[in-house]
Length: 254
Image 1 (cartoon, rainbow, N blue to C red):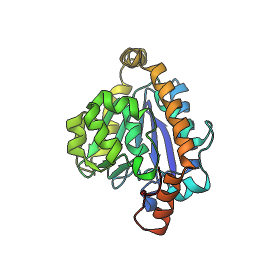
Image 2 (cartoon, rainbow, N blue to C red):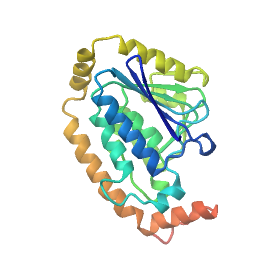
Image 3 (cartoon, rainbow, N blue to C red):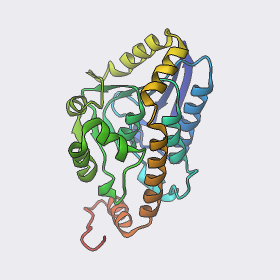
Image 4 (cartoon, rainbow, N blue to C red):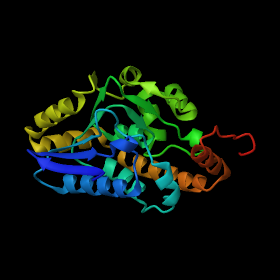
């Protein structure tokens, strides 16, 4: 199974489990994660939800071959279903990040309430490098969290950044050894699970209040741009270069 789910002691766990591909996400994986998020949020026995990968990789982002074979051309595509499930979740979301967290591997963290990173974590937002635009309302949330200039640097250049920089920018709560990160996230989740569910939901709602409609609208705007750009020359050149293992040439595309 490429996505493992479990509910125990008030905690729903969603684990990306495709280590041979550094947990690169396919359409079925997005669907499974979206279903698990919604099920956990609806289950009265669940107090919080933990998302993690392995000790070596959170996720390398989209599996580009699957992405090309199953392009998300509609609003109901699995990737957009997963993205919309994140801000809709009313229960605390906890993430444990180790190794690469590329693209959606970083943007999903903007919707998590607690994020714990391994010392080997590497974040990247290479949307422009792929001829695409940001998703998951990251064009709204990242500047709010880290400031416009730093967000622009990450979203426009798409260069990787370290766990130390992510923590300094306010994207993660704490850095731990890779072998301890998932365990620490689960221990923090256990603390949450012992607290009153009504208090957790109310606190999260109040912190997020006022942002909900803006996030939904920004996701729609980003999604429309993203889908249009998927079939544009720049993205076609980026994907062809990836499959052909060469550097893309954007000099002749807009």
